[in-house]
Length: 348
Image 1 (cartoon, helix red, strand yellow):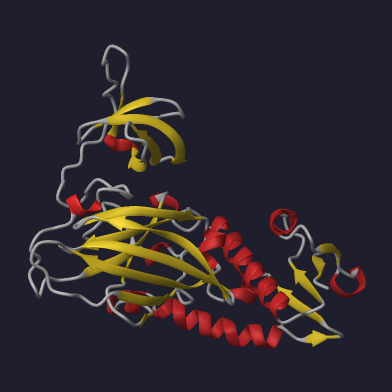
Image 2: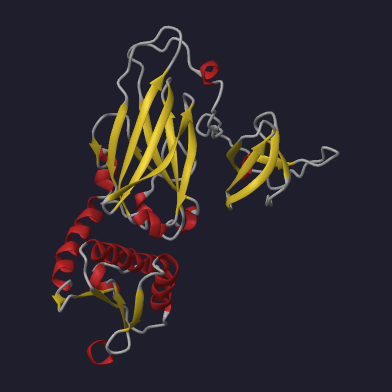
């Protein structure tokens, strides 16, 4: 069922409803409820509501495993005390995780990535999340999450998520009645080795009907990946290390000019079987990383060798420069040195 902004809806598996205030993606919308809160809700969990209470019920998907999927909970700025769990046992598990879920399960390599916080514990949470791109940290989300629920935090494009080096998670465990003091969670999750454009990164799991990458964040440590995920991505990590060695050989400075070859075989040797979308995403990820590093290292000029081909890579590269780096000047690089398939960007 398709919705548009302004549609009146009711919740399929819960009482109440509201008005569609924003279309997040084809699978989720933002609902403005009668009490003034906006909450993300899956499209399949909604039905349209008319003045005569006539509902469109065709094509509605009913979940056959209600225990596995729970309705995403909204942040509650007031009245939190009434929602705190009672009498949590001393040794109750504190299983908290970040869930990365492709919005398009059939095209995970080019899909937006939805980031969820999963609270698989009897505690309520007061949480904070920030991300690190290059050397700076940026606030991402904070709020409240009830026990045994999950919440959609933010959606990233493939190019944006590829630029995240680390993610910082903090949480305080909350309960009322009889309780036992718990140390807060304070975790740094390293995402530098995660290849989000690889479809086999996402697996069946206990928290989502969709395939997802699940990373635990319950402790006070720097987390790379849980053991199972680390084994799944061992191949990707090896490939990244090989790419780093070759990248060092490629990035030779001559007269303060840094050369970056974006041909896919220079970035990822074993690219057989990759779709055109996956290849262009990988090339643009390399472009963003190299450009940001060059800016940090105060490189004066950088040449991106993209070739001629069908012009798609050059188009995406120039589009990114115009939209995300409007202060940078660029031009075709020297025809004599690079032919007709390179762009020079001036950083200073």
